[in-house]
Length: 89
Length: 372
Image (cartoon, rainbow over the protein chains, first blue to last red):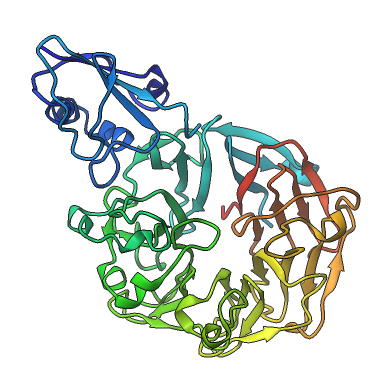
């Protein structure tokens, strides 16, 4: 199962431990996380469901290319890291 | 007089107090490290609200039911899905995108007979209303869908925004907003319909044939005299304006001194001819005139101004004061303001003299006297 890991900086605001999820895309993987933690969604995505400007998401070490629709695919053993971008601090 | 001041800053929310009427001190901090823009002390039920502007994780709204001892996150206004096709909110930027709230730029309570009702203005320029103390929010679509709204443009920020909202405690159907840049707008029917109320303002930043247009005005701050609600003041981008006919017409106050540029204005709660400003050089040089921090006060409706400087730094001071960073309490005697360089001052005598509360806070975004 893909694993989603969140920047520890988010723990200042809300709990978001690493989670193993189903899903074959970044969108479906995150949606599963948000289903159990709806408040987290607004920290990662903007009002239109896009990745926030100063949030970076990596899949298996590569930055996702589709920040609007989150269509980048994830595999069963993928690791998705949701990080705080160096910009925006 | 109010004995507490809430200070929203680039690095947290601070509370200043003066036990037993002594010196002001910073008594408490919250959200350390996080930007806190707007603060609302709801006079109807004592609830505190703090608007966070997290650099990475977006705008957040927190609420306290125990006067700031503890806080809980509630819901921030959010553009609904069906605004996704509307790219007009980024008017003036290189690449137009569907709207997402970047900042809650104004937050006020509804009328006295509307418990729990809140109004929020945002960047980009939407007006939102909550009926349940910020648990849920609804975009005011009548304003959002106006063709004129789509012509608003950014002033200072890239996007247009609503920074001033005035709702009289006795009439929740009368809502007045200030937009940079879009002028002053009024609804008399609870937000169903809107009329531009910027007649008389003029814009130095527009071509001559456009300068009187209502929908391009940049009123940096719009305030109403609580005791005389027909009387309004605005610190506009290129001057001070006053209305004595409930925003039907605005008249430029040409005597403003030592300059006509600035952001905040506060008006005395019962004496409509008395208002205070914090002038800066002008729009492209946003520092105090001659490096001296002063407050200007008129007590005769703008016919003349006194320049108040006792207790304020008069050499190499480069404090700028944002539009929400000055407040007056209900007595009309006590004022406070804070600056971009983290200085905070208060006066007990209508601005005749000032006491320094701190010179080393983070950059100050907002200053509010406690209503309790």
